[in-house]
Length: 356
Image 1 (tube, rainbow, N blue to C red):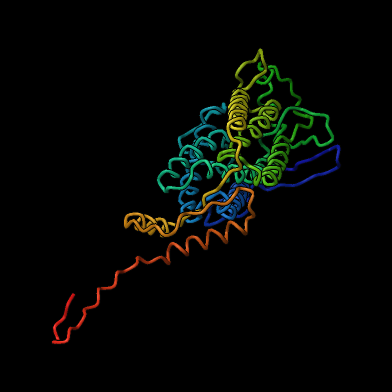
Image 2 (image 1 turned 90 degrees about the vertical axis):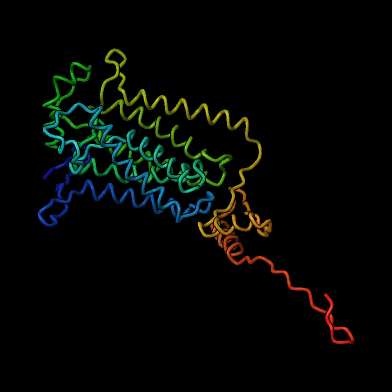
């Protein structure tokens, strides 16, 4: 049990990290909340897939591969970069108590997800766009798992929303000397920054802004580029408050995660400036083909009788318009049948013989 207090606000919560027990195995709220965030992000991606020219059925395989590798790489990143002594290999693999790194999740999701896009033949940059927006939803919700676990908090604060619990006090007391060596002076008896809350709010605000601007995108990959900029800037200032990040430079008071955040922002800004100068016309989105329609279309091309050309819609078109046009185009392709030539009729002469 964790008793979490917000002293200046007069709020107090009693949290049990274990949601329920299943066949002798504790199921933690951390995992449930993380899974909820993941599910909501996936629902958004599947709902708006047609608006990005993506077939939802093939997107399932990409999301499956990306999700598995995001979890694996997130844990690898955390184990590699967060200073913690593990007693066994099983402790390294156990994520029920928390311990995943968002940068590792990004690498796993987009690297292996991109390879899966090539495999399933769906547009990679457009997929990155819709998945990046889903990521914001997942991060915004998933960070509340850190609240239940009382982890990923910051240094002491006198702000009204400062948070205190025995878990934060124990952590700061056990790491006080190490933090002092890194230039962070902490008092275990005082409230701390609820950095999980900061990231949750900024991610959800970012999602709302991205969703409002989604129809105004000018090139495939733009939402992903915006995500790099938004998430990088977000992580830079939040990581500067946290006490559990690997230090890059004590002299500069700069953490390794902040360096990565700066790289994300710089790369995103460079791409955005370049593409805005290069792209002048509104983005046209090719409508998504189902697997069956794609196979049928190849057959039509081979016979030299392509009667249906995949259509496009401007990115600014409404969601219902995309869904209806996509459905009609796929139906038209699947309904197409090759024309059969009728045999020439034989003429009957006066003596009863036939002529071709």
